[in-house]
Figure 1 (tube, rainbow, N blue to C red):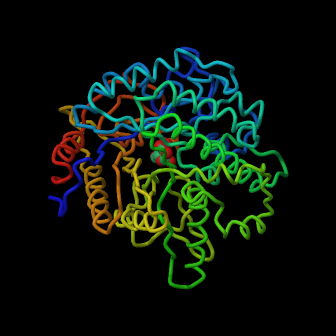
Figure 2 (tube, protein in one colour; figure 1 turned 60 degrees about the vertical axis):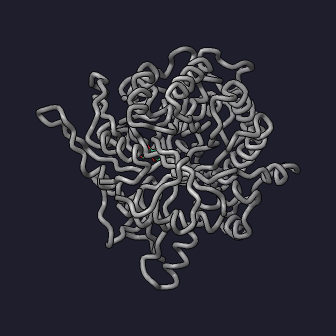
Figure 3 (cartoon, rainbow, N blue to C red; figure 1 turned 90 degrees about the vertical axis):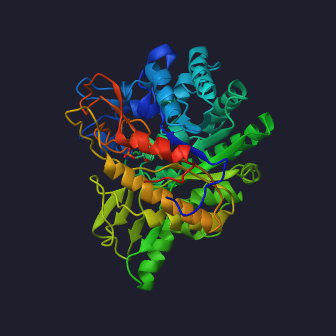
Length: 474
Ligand code: BG6
């Protein structure tokens, strides 16, 4: 049993993203997105990191996003299962390319709008509040090819048009919005984060931070538009979270951890405080980054977000010499000898969630929303058909307990959506076998499988957690 109670209105639920679940990658007029050209297998990382210039589809590659778990055709069945668990909130994203297939089209694609309207209505049918990300790692490929994606200032206008269309079309159906998923990931994985790839000899930092500026202006602009469209709208930023710990008390390790945190928090500093942080001047000078801005940009940035959302899978660790590195969520980290790791090497650190929540709340004093957390693990189907994922229950239980501790520390938390509530394609590796769900999907790494859905043991556990508003965690 939990020591404390959760507020009545606490939003329990789960999260997915269009690009990792929907499939139907060219159906009903959908255009090609960045994620659709990221293959599974050995060439995946090169593309994700922006080191591949040839972004055409190849016959001998397998692209997991093309079918994913076919949520596009299964959403009714899937939402019914989430409702059975008692979900109060469901986080998903809109695929930009379903609404504007090329990104720069003059009119939106009616079939794309219809799909999302139907989806949000389906959620409403069960009193599930949608929480919607406008851009979750999927820029229209046409914008990459024609404009170089977020390298170009023109992207601001395309994104504004797209966001405005969503706010108008889904007005009254969606009230919680996120602009960019894990905006800081563009630093670590530039193609998946922002559709960026590099040419020989380019200053990568210049490209990344100029693109970041365009995204930050776009994010602030659409935040303003969302508020004008409907004062009920609440807009959040989204951070790939997890504090850096210093590897030792050597002040140089402490400083490195501080600098690494700032690298990620820089984005949220702008989105939550409405201006570039003072430390950015020196960082940019040292990286030889010169941001080209327009006169009005600094005023637009003053449109700050209403809440801070973040993902948390693992804490990170830094030392003066970043050797012996591991990786969690593409953010490089030193291996922490005090922590166990998942099958994919991601550190398991429930207390780190409490620490991260306190850092974020102290820094911004805005409500937080945990929009991703979970354990990617291999599941086994027993002979009787059951899936006994006690490891997942254990991970989630410990994190929920620490989340509650953070709330007792004074942190305001709107809700919790665990990641991949239904199994989906892993963003880092493209695997299906890295499963996060309460619901198993029969789909394998090579694309085979019947797509049948099955309740895991964690399904019944989470149902109880929600039913008792977090009181019963056993
Ligand atoms: C976050 C992303 O980076 O972590 C999700 O927002 C992603 O899209 C999740 O799926 C977990 O990472 P992975 O690689 O295990 O899918």
